[in-house]
Image (cartoon, rainbow, N blue to C red; front, top):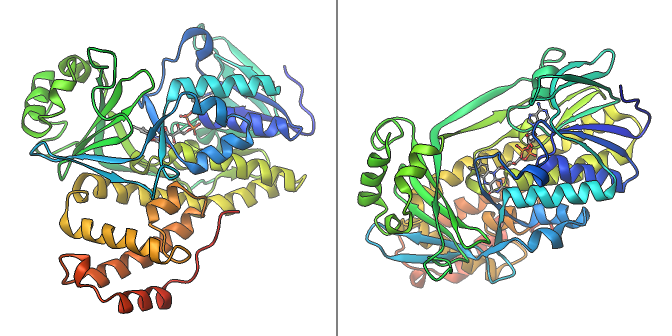
Length: 455
Ligand code: FAD
């Protein structure tokens, strides 16, 4: 059995958050053991996870810079300047995310990212234990039991504190609920997703614009596609679970082809294995996990998806998890009292997690239903204009969340105030040409205080 002492900590899960947190803590002088249910992806290849690529934004990159991982990760990243909207009639329109190429997001391959982060954590000095799935915890004796999925053998390790970076289905969370009421509830979105693939073109190049996140918005449902550095795109089809079309009516590869012929006609020729992909890949469930409490005194704490899984429509789940890692490392450094550090971490992060969970839900409606709507496009045009005229007071919510580290809760509240203003100022107008800019500027100065700046 492993012995523990002060400044020793045990992480559950060597996924994205686990690997980053391990590095940050080792850098600060902690001895870190990380237990991962799966085998080492650097040896056996990356087998897990349904989302093949992820959008990396400034919050995530900030954590990666602190962990000394940003350069290595960015070697595999593909820039996405904006949303390329594919209309039903085949027209396309690139809607930029930011002002210029300094405000973009990056598509990274989940498996490659995990491998890079594990290498960095191990090189820093974290001890990684693969094929060790947490299966039971004796919180009184402070002993964790791990099961090797290959042969069912069990292994025990003593711990001072456990950190649950073991994802949405967290085993640590389940063990904690036997000791403390976490107030857990999961709200299903009622929509699911399937992944499909666009291979490279015949000449080996990307077959559609690589530097964009492609969206085919269709009201109650949509498709998106993100570029990979091997010149493929991962396509994700989001559909409701019920109604028509839905995963209840689109059940076979043949049904999927019919749906694409009707609704995603320009995407269809790009996905030669549509039927096979559709029938082989499982439908992923979309849900939001809420907890009222993230820790059990100083013995256990949860972060990332284990604490606050969210729907993926803001591309922030991993970014938020990385921001959690920085916050937890800082709170652990600030006091020797682990219970106090975990409580401070929860007080700091829980309101922000709630805010991004809500914004992620709202973004689904925006992506599938509003990006081709005239009122929305006018409000966006005014938003861009106001961001230029009043950079210290007006920043699009997407920019606050994606290109800055303004706390999510602040971005959420400011976003609400700004949205009200945009709706009011554009009401009755079909273009920006008819606006009275004196009135507009006065309203911004009166209603919006100067924005906080990134720390
Ligand atoms: P995970 O990445 O799930 O890692 C958990 C780790 O714990 C895994 O390695 C797992 O094997 C291990 N584990 C599980 N159980 C045990 C156990 N009992 N014992 C030991 N180890 C265990 N986020 C973004 O920022 N941008 C995006 O564009 C984006 N797109 C997404 C698209 C989809 C379709 C989905 C579903 C999610 C997306 N996300 C995105 C969210 C992102 O994937 C998660 O927020 C992120 O992976 C959370 O990291 P984590 O380390 O908390 O959990």
